[in-house]
Image 1 (cartoon, one colour):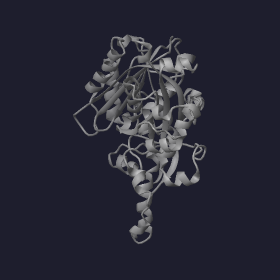
Image 2 (cartoon, helix red, strand yellow):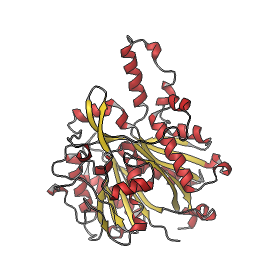
Image 3 (tube, helix red, strand yellow):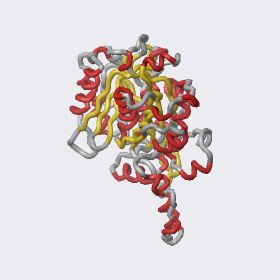
Image 4 (tube, helix red, strand yellow):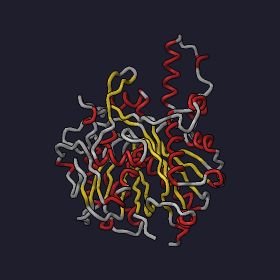
Length: 412
C-alpha cells in the first residue's frame, strides 16, 4: 500500500457526559467516573440519562444556536475542537476540499417536540410553528450546520445509521479521502437523544429503559442484573488526512485506520444477529490484512440490554476464539448509550491505549452474566497490558446495521 492510501487521525474533538475533551474523557474512563445522572424528562419525570455539559456558545453565537439544533451545536463544538487539536492553519486551508461526514441516529427531534408542546400550550395555534423547522429537520443537518459555521464549501452529509453511526461516519470519511474527493475529512458521529422525550418513551415501551436508584449504576452492560439502556447524548469528530499530507505539515498522528466493514442482519427490526456480527468483524480484519490474533483490544457495543449483550458476547467469543491474547472492554457503563455518537466517542476513549498501555475497564459489572463471559474481559479496574498495536471498535444499530472499525498504532 502506498503512503497516499494510508489514512490517519490527526485531531479529535468530543463531548461526552463525563468529559469535554479527550484528556478529560480518558481520565474518567480510567477512574470509572460515570456521566449518567437523574434528569427530568418531559411527561416521564425523573429518568437516568447522560447529558453533555459543554459551552454551546464557544464557537457559535446565541442567535445562530437558537436557529439551529442541539445536534448541530454538538457537531459545531466537536468539529472546531478537532480542527484546533489537529493544529490546522484553518485560514489557509482550501475549504472546497474539506468534507463533513457525520453518522446520526436522528436529529431535529428536540426542537420538533418543543414546537408541538408549545402548540398544545397555546390552543393548537399552528402559526406558532417555527419558520426554522425545515432546515432543522432536513437530512443533511447537522453536518450542514458545521459547514455554515466553518465556511466549508466541500461536500457534507449525514449518514443515518442508527447506533452504528459513529463508525459509519469515519468509514465514509476514509472512503472519500481514498477516492480523492476531499483532502481533509471531519468525520464521526453525533447524537442529541437524551434531550428528547420520544426515545425514552419508546425504550420504556420495549422494556429496555435502564433504571436504578443510583444513576451512576444504571448502565451496566454484561452485568447479570442489567435492565436496559441509559440514553445519552454526545459527539466525536476526527480530523482524517492522507498520511503524506499529515507528514508534510508535521501533524501529530493519533492512529492509522487500517480496516473497516459494514453489513446488515436482514433478520429483525431490533434483535441482533450474532452470526452477522461475526461476519462484520472478520471482514474488517481481512480488509486490514490481519488475523484475529493480531487484534489487541476489542471495544464492545454492549448496550446493557439482555438479548443484545448475550448475542454480542457470543459473537466476540466466536470471532476471537483463535486469539487467546485479545483483550475486551466496553464503555457504556461510564457514559450510557450515546446512540449515533457512541462508536466515535468510544473509539476515541480507547486510542490513548496506544501510548499508555492501559485498557480502560467496563464499569458497573458487579456480577458478570455467565452468558456474557469472554476471555480477557477487562472490568471494574484498568489493566496494564503493555504494547497495544491494533484496536477493533464494534458499533451496531437497529434495523440490523453492523459496523467494525480497526485502528493501528501509527508507525512510519
